[in-house]
Length: 240
Image (cartoon, rainbow, N blue to C red; front, side, top):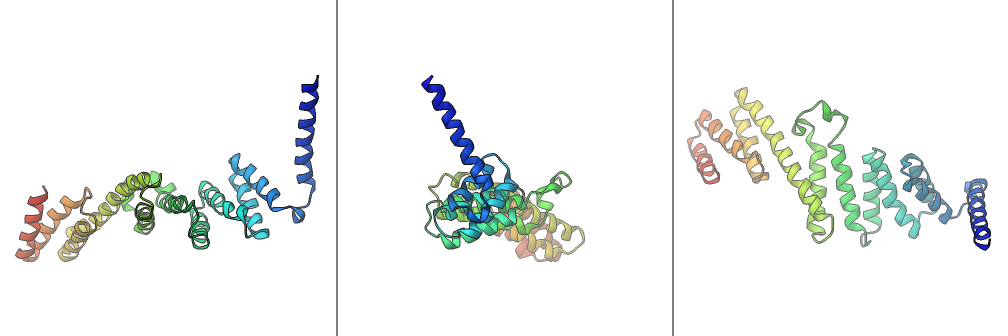
Protein backbone atom coordinates (compact mmCIF):
# COMPACT_ATOMS: atom_id res chain seq x y z
CA UNK A 1 0.00 0.00 0.00
CA UNK A 2 2.86 2.34 0.91
CA UNK A 3 4.62 1.55 -2.41
CA UNK A 4 1.42 2.33 -4.33
CA UNK A 5 1.09 5.69 -2.58
CA UNK A 6 4.72 6.58 -3.34
CA UNK A 7 4.20 5.71 -7.01
CA UNK A 8 1.11 7.94 -7.17
CA UNK A 9 2.99 10.81 -5.51
CA UNK A 10 5.90 10.42 -7.97
CA UNK A 11 3.60 10.42 -11.00
CA UNK A 12 1.74 13.48 -9.73
CA UNK A 13 5.00 15.35 -9.10
CA UNK A 14 6.28 14.55 -12.59
CA UNK A 15 3.04 15.62 -14.20
CA UNK A 16 3.03 18.79 -12.13
CA UNK A 17 6.59 19.59 -13.21
CA UNK A 18 5.76 19.05 -16.88
CA UNK A 19 2.54 21.03 -16.73
CA UNK A 20 4.18 23.92 -14.90
CA UNK A 21 6.79 24.15 -17.66
CA UNK A 22 4.10 24.15 -20.31
CA UNK A 23 1.99 26.77 -18.52
CA UNK A 24 4.92 29.00 -17.64
CA UNK A 25 5.69 31.62 -20.34
CA UNK A 26 9.07 31.11 -22.01
CA UNK A 27 10.11 34.61 -21.01
CA UNK A 28 10.20 33.32 -17.42
CA UNK A 29 12.04 30.06 -18.11
CA UNK A 30 15.34 29.46 -16.36
CA UNK A 31 18.37 28.20 -18.27
CA UNK A 32 17.77 24.78 -16.72
CA UNK A 33 14.20 24.74 -18.06
CA UNK A 34 15.30 25.70 -21.57
CA UNK A 35 17.97 23.02 -21.48
CA UNK A 36 15.53 20.43 -20.10
CA UNK A 37 13.13 21.11 -22.97
CA UNK A 38 15.85 21.15 -25.64
CA UNK A 39 17.51 17.99 -24.34
CA UNK A 40 14.18 16.19 -24.19
CA UNK A 41 13.57 16.94 -27.86
CA UNK A 42 17.19 16.03 -28.65
CA UNK A 43 16.97 12.65 -26.92
CA UNK A 44 13.73 11.91 -28.78
CA UNK A 45 15.34 12.68 -32.14
CA UNK A 46 13.06 15.65 -32.70
CA UNK A 47 15.84 17.65 -34.32
CA UNK A 48 13.78 20.62 -35.51
CA UNK A 49 12.29 21.25 -32.06
CA UNK A 50 15.63 20.62 -30.36
CA UNK A 51 17.23 23.23 -32.62
CA UNK A 52 14.50 25.73 -31.79
CA UNK A 53 14.97 25.41 -28.03
CA UNK A 54 18.77 25.27 -28.08
CA UNK A 55 18.74 28.49 -30.11
CA UNK A 56 16.38 30.07 -27.57
CA UNK A 57 18.63 28.92 -24.73
CA UNK A 58 21.66 30.53 -26.37
CA UNK A 59 19.75 33.72 -27.08
CA UNK A 60 18.54 34.09 -23.49
CA UNK A 61 21.54 32.60 -21.64
CA UNK A 62 24.63 32.93 -23.88
CA UNK A 63 27.12 32.08 -21.12
CA UNK A 64 27.63 29.26 -18.66
CA UNK A 65 27.79 25.49 -18.58
CA UNK A 66 24.45 24.94 -20.29
CA UNK A 67 25.38 27.30 -23.14
CA UNK A 68 28.66 25.40 -23.67
CA UNK A 69 26.85 22.09 -23.93
CA UNK A 70 24.15 23.64 -26.09
CA UNK A 71 26.70 24.48 -28.81
CA UNK A 72 27.72 20.85 -29.26
CA UNK A 73 24.22 19.39 -29.04
CA UNK A 74 22.83 22.10 -31.31
CA UNK A 75 25.56 21.42 -33.87
CA UNK A 76 24.76 17.70 -33.80
CA UNK A 77 21.04 18.42 -34.15
CA UNK A 78 21.73 20.63 -37.17
CA UNK A 79 23.87 17.84 -38.66
CA UNK A 80 21.12 15.28 -38.16
CA UNK A 81 18.53 17.71 -39.52
CA UNK A 82 20.60 17.89 -42.71
CA UNK A 83 21.80 21.46 -42.21
CA UNK A 84 25.58 20.91 -42.25
CA UNK A 85 26.46 24.56 -42.85
CA UNK A 86 24.59 25.55 -39.68
CA UNK A 87 26.37 22.75 -37.79
CA UNK A 88 29.76 23.99 -39.03
CA UNK A 89 28.88 27.55 -38.01
CA UNK A 90 28.05 26.45 -34.46
CA UNK A 91 31.20 24.36 -34.19
CA UNK A 92 33.46 27.13 -35.51
CA UNK A 93 32.01 29.47 -32.88
CA UNK A 94 32.42 26.83 -30.16
CA UNK A 95 36.05 26.18 -31.13
CA UNK A 96 36.76 29.93 -31.14
CA UNK A 97 35.12 30.61 -27.75
CA UNK A 98 36.31 27.46 -25.94
CA UNK A 99 39.79 26.65 -27.34
CA UNK A 100 40.68 24.51 -24.30
CA UNK A 101 37.38 22.71 -23.86
CA UNK A 102 37.69 18.98 -22.98
CA UNK A 103 35.36 18.14 -25.89
CA UNK A 104 37.44 20.04 -28.45
CA UNK A 105 38.47 16.84 -30.27
CA UNK A 106 34.81 15.91 -30.64
CA UNK A 107 33.97 19.39 -31.92
CA UNK A 108 36.63 19.16 -34.62
CA UNK A 109 35.54 15.65 -35.58
CA UNK A 110 31.88 16.66 -35.80
CA UNK A 111 32.91 19.60 -37.98
CA UNK A 112 34.74 17.17 -40.27
CA UNK A 113 31.70 14.90 -40.43
CA UNK A 114 29.41 17.86 -41.19
CA UNK A 115 31.80 19.07 -43.90
CA UNK A 116 31.89 15.54 -45.27
CA UNK A 117 28.10 15.42 -45.45
CA UNK A 118 28.22 18.39 -47.83
CA UNK A 119 30.27 16.13 -50.04
CA UNK A 120 27.43 13.59 -50.06
CA UNK A 121 24.04 14.79 -51.21
CA UNK A 122 20.81 13.62 -52.75
CA UNK A 123 22.73 13.71 -56.05
CA UNK A 124 24.67 10.64 -54.93
CA UNK A 125 22.22 8.28 -56.60
CA UNK A 126 22.70 10.11 -59.91
CA UNK A 127 26.49 10.42 -59.75
CA UNK A 128 28.15 7.00 -59.78
CA UNK A 129 31.62 8.26 -58.87
CA UNK A 130 31.91 10.78 -55.99
CA UNK A 131 35.06 12.11 -57.66
CA UNK A 132 32.85 13.79 -60.27
CA UNK A 133 31.30 16.11 -57.68
CA UNK A 134 32.58 19.56 -56.85
CA UNK A 135 35.88 19.28 -54.98
CA UNK A 136 35.39 22.21 -52.56
CA UNK A 137 33.42 20.34 -49.91
CA UNK A 138 35.64 17.28 -50.24
CA UNK A 139 38.74 19.42 -49.68
CA UNK A 140 37.18 21.09 -46.63
CA UNK A 141 36.32 17.70 -45.15
CA UNK A 142 39.82 16.44 -45.99
CA UNK A 143 41.45 19.32 -44.11
CA UNK A 144 39.06 18.97 -41.17
CA UNK A 145 39.89 15.27 -40.77
CA UNK A 146 43.59 16.12 -41.00
CA UNK A 147 43.21 18.52 -38.07
CA UNK A 148 41.64 15.77 -35.94
CA UNK A 149 44.48 13.37 -36.76
CA UNK A 150 47.26 15.92 -36.24
CA UNK A 151 45.94 17.67 -33.13
CA UNK A 152 44.20 14.78 -31.40
CA UNK A 153 46.06 11.60 -32.43
CA UNK A 154 45.14 9.80 -29.21
CA UNK A 155 41.46 10.70 -29.31
CA UNK A 156 38.77 8.11 -30.12
CA UNK A 157 38.07 10.05 -33.33
CA UNK A 158 41.53 9.74 -34.90
CA UNK A 159 41.06 6.26 -36.38
CA UNK A 160 37.66 7.08 -37.92
CA UNK A 161 39.18 10.27 -39.36
CA UNK A 162 42.09 8.32 -40.84
CA UNK A 163 39.74 5.83 -42.49
CA UNK A 164 37.63 8.58 -44.01
CA UNK A 165 40.75 10.46 -45.10
CA UNK A 166 41.86 7.49 -47.21
CA UNK A 167 38.51 7.49 -49.01
CA UNK A 168 38.64 11.24 -49.62
CA UNK A 169 42.26 11.02 -50.83
CA UNK A 170 41.27 8.53 -53.51
CA UNK A 171 38.19 10.55 -54.38
CA UNK A 172 40.15 13.78 -54.85
CA UNK A 173 42.88 12.01 -56.81
CA UNK A 174 40.31 10.41 -59.13
CA UNK A 175 38.76 13.80 -59.72
CA UNK A 176 42.13 15.20 -60.83
CA UNK A 177 42.53 12.20 -63.14
CA UNK A 178 39.08 12.77 -64.67
CA UNK A 179 40.21 16.29 -65.56
CA UNK A 180 43.65 15.13 -66.75
CA UNK A 181 42.07 12.55 -69.06
CA UNK A 182 39.63 15.16 -70.34
CA UNK A 183 42.52 17.41 -71.36
CA UNK A 184 44.50 14.52 -72.82
CA UNK A 185 41.65 13.36 -75.06
CA UNK A 186 41.34 16.88 -76.44
CA UNK A 187 45.04 17.22 -77.17
CA UNK A 188 45.78 19.61 -74.31
CA UNK A 189 48.78 17.52 -73.30
CA UNK A 190 50.54 20.07 -71.10
CA UNK A 191 47.38 20.69 -69.06
CA UNK A 192 46.91 16.92 -68.79
CA UNK A 193 50.48 16.43 -67.61
CA UNK A 194 50.12 19.19 -65.03
CA UNK A 195 46.95 17.63 -63.59
CA UNK A 196 48.56 14.21 -63.48
CA UNK A 197 51.62 15.69 -61.76
CA UNK A 198 49.32 17.21 -59.12
CA UNK A 199 47.96 13.73 -58.39
CA UNK A 200 51.47 12.34 -57.87
CA UNK A 201 52.58 15.29 -55.72
CA UNK A 202 49.49 15.69 -53.52
CA UNK A 203 48.10 12.14 -53.41
CA UNK A 204 51.13 9.84 -53.89
CA UNK A 205 49.53 6.96 -51.99
CA UNK A 206 46.22 7.10 -53.81
CA UNK A 207 45.01 4.46 -56.25
CA UNK A 208 45.34 7.03 -59.03
CA UNK A 209 49.09 7.59 -58.59
CA UNK A 210 50.17 4.88 -61.07
CA UNK A 211 47.64 5.88 -63.76
CA UNK A 212 48.81 9.47 -63.27
CA UNK A 213 52.43 8.49 -63.95
CA UNK A 214 51.37 6.63 -67.09
CA UNK A 215 49.47 9.67 -68.32
CA UNK A 216 52.42 11.95 -67.52
CA UNK A 217 54.77 9.74 -69.54
CA UNK A 218 52.41 9.68 -72.52
CA UNK A 219 51.57 13.39 -72.41
CA UNK A 220 55.21 14.45 -72.19
CA UNK A 221 56.06 12.15 -75.09
CA UNK A 222 53.31 13.77 -77.16
CA UNK A 223 54.82 17.15 -76.35
CA UNK A 224 58.32 16.01 -77.28
CA UNK A 225 59.49 16.62 -73.72
CA UNK A 226 61.57 13.45 -73.62
CA UNK A 227 63.45 14.24 -70.41
CA UNK A 228 60.18 14.65 -68.50
CA UNK A 229 58.80 11.52 -70.14
CA UNK A 230 61.87 9.53 -69.06
CA UNK A 231 61.56 10.85 -65.47
CA UNK A 232 57.92 9.76 -65.41
CA UNK A 233 58.93 6.33 -66.77
CA UNK A 234 61.57 5.92 -64.05
CA UNK A 235 59.06 6.79 -61.34
CA UNK A 236 56.50 4.46 -62.91
CA UNK A 237 58.93 1.53 -62.97
CA UNK A 238 60.02 2.23 -59.38
CA UNK A 239 56.44 2.22 -58.13
CA UNK A 240 54.89 -0.51 -60.26
